[in-house]
Amino acid sequence: MNKERICQLQQLREDMRLAYIHEEQFALRESDLLAILDILDNIKELGTG
Image (cartoon, rainbow, N blue to C red; front, side, top):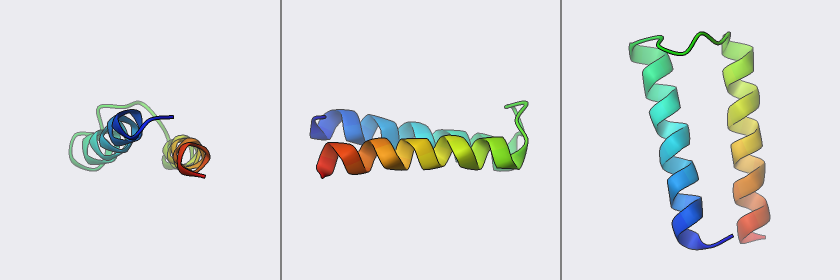
């Protein structure tokens, strides 16, 4: 995975986190959101690994 894609995933993760905290736009339970963030972290680690 290239560096640009990793940056996009990191930005997506941050955008989702901020939307959840400030707007609660995503109809997700906190546990669901944390699972998604863990998956994105794992993808990032695979890309940089």
